[in-house]
Length: 285
View 1: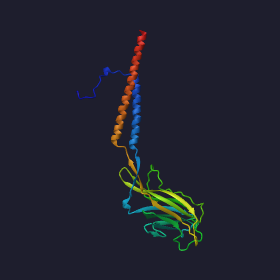
View 2: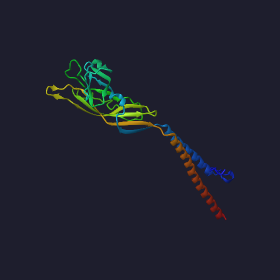
View 3: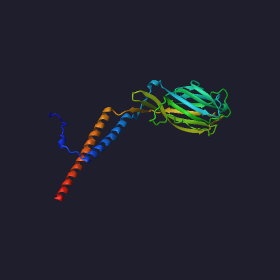
View 4: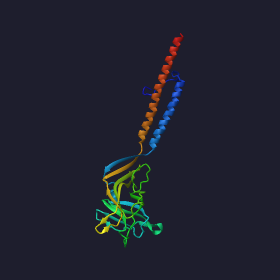
């Protein structure tokens, strides 16, 4: 058939050589190595990140979930409270919903755990004695922060981010009468998996200062302040996998390219070998 572009060469016109066999074996090993490398890349999920200006979680009702876990080893649980304020006029003293206090050091200390929501506007929440019925003379605000996180928890190993930047913050050796200010810049974060499902979380950066505050009436009652503001920039992580057509194209390129290069090398070696044989025969003659 004239339409056959893959015409066959009769075996009588071909000549096997040891060099060709060696090159063929090396060629197969090389192609197998490249094939396995491409297969690994095809199976592995790639995470691509991008930045844009928008509020990703519009269905949240303008709220952000917060989870806090903090130990105050020198302050009794009856004195510990959580207060929430923001620029929308919210002012809540002694927030107790979804919170728990666990006594430490035989009742002399307290671990406070709480989950609550904040509005997506600048504000603060603080751990203090403001909600106590009777204010202590010298409240000790030394503390250890176990967790402070916003939004959903992302259990993804390949993402490096500051989702719990204050986790492990140790102020146990600080001045017990000092207030602590943690200034947080919250960054909305979206994670989209291969199925298109999105999860919403928040990273944050933090700066802190420690001080003893006074007014004209005397020393101000110390507290642990978390002052926050939201960044307009959203970070989005997207899971991607190499398309099947690109994987097939790469495999074809590997096979075709390897055979072509191997054929050129074998042809050069064979031609050089034949020319050398003719030279040797000519000398013998």
